[in-house]
Amino acid sequence: MSFIRKKKQIRFEAAQLAESTSYLHNPSCGWYRIYPFIIEEKQDFEELYWCLCAEESIVLALVDIGAFRDDALPEDALDNLRRILEFFNKHGKEVILRIIYDREGRGMEREPDFLGTVIGHMQQLGAVIGKYKDHILVVQGILVGSWGEMHDSKFLSEERLRQLLRVWQEALGDIPIAVRTPQQWRILHDDGAAPGRDKIGLFNDGMFGSLDHLGTYGWQRKAEAGWRGQWCREEEIEFTGRVAAVVPYGGEAVGEALESSVSPQAALAVRELPNQEKARGNVSQFSQSEIIEELRSTGVSYLNSTHDARRLQQWKESLCGKPGIWKQKSMFDYIGCHLGYRFVVRKAELTGKKDLALKIYIENTGFSTMKEPAELVLFLGQRYTLPDDLCGLLPQETREITVQLPLDRKKIMITPPQDRKEAACKRMVSLSMHRKRDKRPIFFANEHLEDGGVKLGVLSWQE
Image 1 (cartoon, rainbow, N blue to C red):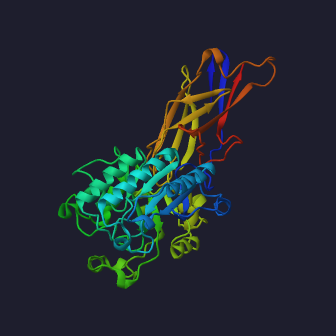
Image 2 (image 1 turned 60 degrees about the vertical axis):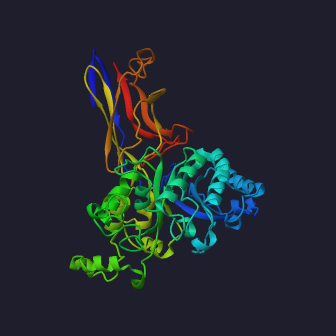
Image 3 (image 1 turned 135 degrees about the vertical axis):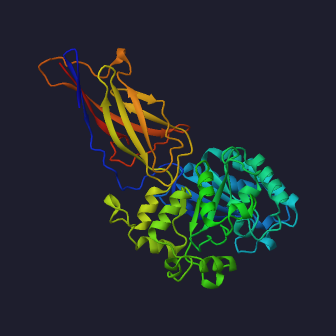
């Protein structure tokens, strides 16, 4: 494409912007694995270093404080937590943090007898955790319940849930907090509340274990269940997606539940399913397309890479069923590459005759949105920070970014060659992005230059 201006010709040769199938090491999304700790025990951090997975930038630190169910946390235990968080910070890991009293499925037995004890622990822990707020992706749960998952607890009434959440928020500041189910989220918010303002999100450690994700969803329509009830699968998926658009959401994908573990409500719902769904035999079986669509609809940003082994092995052995460049990729690879946001530069073109403009088209092919502000930088002989921000761009949406040329007439990026008989002067045009608060690079799902940017094309000037 070229344009004539006073006998001078500006040409733009667009690059081939093919999509990549590479796993991108971008902030705040991807696979993670669990690193369990007992808060009163000192850690061998040299040994722990060799357990870190270089391919994963997220970890889940599971910290058991059950030994102090009847007492305040001693200073040496709090110092152990401080050292754990500092270790992950030092090695560039973003932390999903879950503090628990129980890791054996005995929540009622192992959590404190008194609400005041839990509140005291939250206040003590917050003083440590808050110092690492820039490195914590989300805090899961409010300490109570079996495995810290907010079930099998004496503190789950609406009044106590709200009191604990309020204290936890005050202790943690602006660190996002995730609760276990959409119903719990609604119990903690007034009717019709919109997600986002208070940074309260969701996590789901029962994905695909059954039709209701092991009790995560209900079986009634919203109109029947009311704001504080459990809604049917379809409506809870839509609600979860709205929450996950503003607060990171993820968890664990588990294998199918045993038939005996299916609730009576689930069994009734199965009897009402179309015949082709009944024919699957097990109520918790999902097709590849159903799994991918639900991960996208609920906005999943992170998943456990080691649990449940049955489900993950099934994904590794199955093709994803997507066309084009993904055709021969496994479910595991496809899902991993699309956790969170995934930006692809689809097209770059020069437009206009008198007022030239470069138009760039960027699609989010990931399952979710980017939650934090980022800076787009265009390189045309020098760096230009663009005003556009891809934060909040929804899955499968494309944003058009327009850059007027020249950006600075005094420092024009295309200058005439010294010898007018020589070939036109050329400038490569590239685009890069980084997270605004810490300058951490965010990679596009295109072929990268050495600096991590994407070549958009070449601008040339000719007499």
